[in-house]
Amino acid sequence: MIIQKTENSKLPTFDPNNFSFGDTFIDHMIICEYENGKWGDVKLVPYGPLPFTPAMMGVNYGQACFEGMKAYKDENDDIFLFRPEKNFERINKSAKRLAIPEIPREAFIDGLNALVDIDREWIPKGEGMSLYIRPVVFATEEVLKARVSNKYMFAIVATPAKSYYSAPVSVKISDYYSRSANGGVGFAKAAGNYAASFYPTQLAIDEGYDQVIWTDDATHEYFEESGTMNVFVRINDTIYTPKTSEKILDGVTRDSFLQLAERNGIDVVVGDVKVADVVAALKDGSLKEAWGVGTAVVTTRFEAIGYGDEKFALPTLADEDSFAFILKKALVDIQTNHAEDPFGWRVKVDKKY
Ligand SMILES: Cc1ncc(COP(=O)(O)O)c(C=O)c1O
Image 1 (cartoon, rainbow, N blue to C red):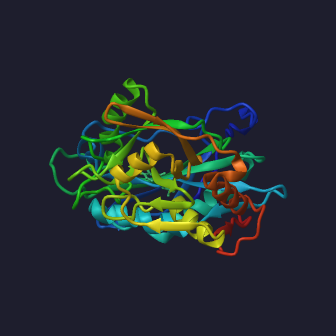
Image 2 (image 1 turned 90 degrees about the horizontal axis):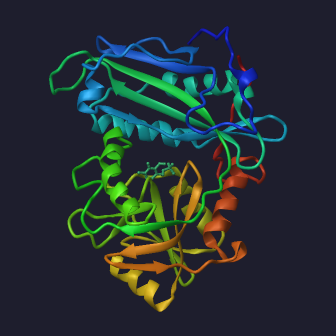
Image 3 (image 1 turned 30 degrees about the horizontal axis):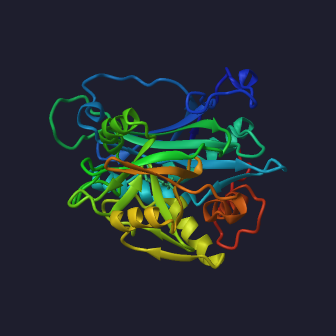
């Protein structure tokens, strides 16, 4: 790996008690370019803009995908990644579907470790604090032809993140728009999936909701995901989540919740989550809670679910009665080194550089 450290660290201007998530970037980034049929050197360089032409294929044809993951700092200033191999596997599943060449381990895993190690001072510590890491790959060939690109850039950038708290949201069950389809790219973290979700989400926002519950494109009778999260509903004391498929992103948080639920003796059913069953449970009061899960905030609870012209309020459970809360706490405690990690999910970032 080629290491080129900045001579202009922005760290002295970074206030861990007052920063904005998503647009504050750490001092460095990883870049690695693909051309002539192979990936070049992995480089750690100062964070900053890259040369760009509007004729770049990634911009025109959307051949791009990414990952989202976090690093956590404990009281002893030890740094941990959470299940990074899952993200490495997933970016390559996404890349394959988008005809992007496989990202090498040296760029993703070694790059990730070097970046987090070198910029470890940037990781805020304390409850809810972390570093959000964004590996991304996009087509860079300068040609206006709708075909597979011959050039790519892989990069990793990162932004400090705070607070797991996210206010409960109200969600609208989609009965028209879809985020994915059979044979499509729903399982991939393809940039275009997000672009396509913005308009329907905006329509839901205009109706007074925060997010869309995506349903299957063929019948709109089955839950798939919620916004950019996997979805769980609890009816009586059983939790239900859709089975992952080529239409659903295989979330790391979802998978972790399932394993933690089993360990905590919570009944889980992974399979079809029927809109009609959820609406019936909302009406008869057996729907106790529902929530989305994802890396960014771990859990977002739903306060209301809308379907057609109806909007159903969900009960407000005390934290100790909420499976969403219990599972989130169990997960966060493992991520932040506040609990034993029987699953081997935590990966310490050694001090190497
Ligand atoms: C569409 C979508 N579904 C689900 C998730 C949750 O995945 P993970 O738990 O791996 O963050 C994400 C990403 O955060 C997503 O973008």
